Structures are given as structure tokens and as C-alpha cells.
Image 1 (cartoon, rainbow, N blue to C red):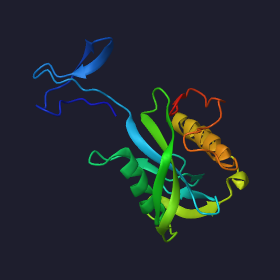
Image 2 (image 1 turned 90 degrees about the vertical axis):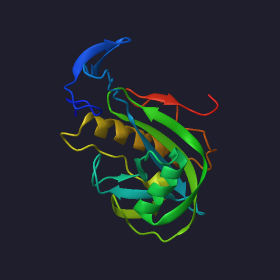
Image 3 (image 1 turned 120 degrees about the vertical axis):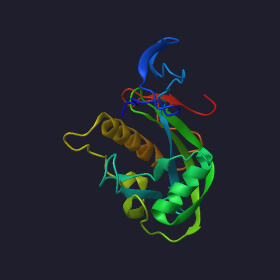
Image 4 (image 1 turned 30 degrees about the horizontal axis):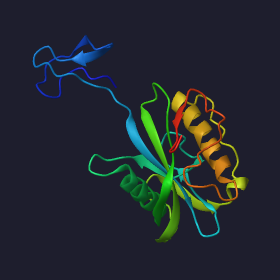
Length: 195
């Protein structure tokens, strides 16, 4: 949704070139509106048997599809704290973060996904907010996500990234930060720790 009015003074915004981009700017007070992607924390969590924690999404994107626990980062928490909170809220399980799997984004989709590897350390498996079902599964037995007809660009990108992350999770014991294969997800910029 495009901002029409200034959040500071209520004046009507006008497009103004700032640097090399056109940005909504308030002529009355000079406030510039920067449209930035929202940070999302996602977790590749495993139990002692190396099974992967999955949630059947209760909200878009990909509502009704199996995915990794994830959610938006709040302004009063770190990305790591958001990852731990989202797993607890969606699955009832407590996790300990082991390392950064990767940071993923695609131009124009409005999100930056920060993916962590974690181990389950407690709690009771039960669906919570944003999840219709939860399960622990051998990642080698998880089927590829088929985007429904009419799926959005975000659905397509998110499904491709999930398939890549889950298929990589099927490796015997990937090291924290090993990241997905070099095979790119369409329109994705990928950064990994140590690369």
C-alpha cells in the first residue's frame, strides 16, 4: 500500500527524487518516506532424531502449505529472538539457535528472510498462532511445494526457497551456515556466513 499522507504532519505526500530514487516526500515538513523490506525470521529446527519441524501455514503466503516456522521481526526484539518466539508461538516448542543458515531476498517482494538452524530443547508440540498443523518429519520425505494457480510472486519465490532449504536439510548432518546448494532460487540474492 502506498502512503498518501505524511505520518508526521498529515500533509499530502508528493513524489520527489532523493538520491537516485523517487520517494514520497512531504512538501510541508520535508519528511521522506522510505519503503523498506520487512525482516522475517525463519527456522530450520530439528529434534534429537534429526527430524525437521514443519508447520502447515494458517496465513498467507502459502496458506495451507507445509513450511518452516517463520514470522515478522518486531521492533523491540532481535532477529534471533524473533526466530525463537515464532517457533514457540507456532509449534509450542522451545529452540536453541545453532547458527545462521542464510539471508535471502528478492527485489520487489518486500521481505528479507533470515534463516537460522536450531535444535529443539523443550516444549510440547502443538499448533499455535499462524499454524493449522505441526509435525516433525524426515526432510527427505517432504514433498515439493506446488504453488496454487493464481499464486503471487511472493508465493512462487517463497515456495522455491522453502523447497531448496528443506531439500538441503535432508543432507545427513549439514554444518550450521552451510546454506542451500549453489543452485539459485529465481530472482534471489543469497548471502551466507563465511562466503
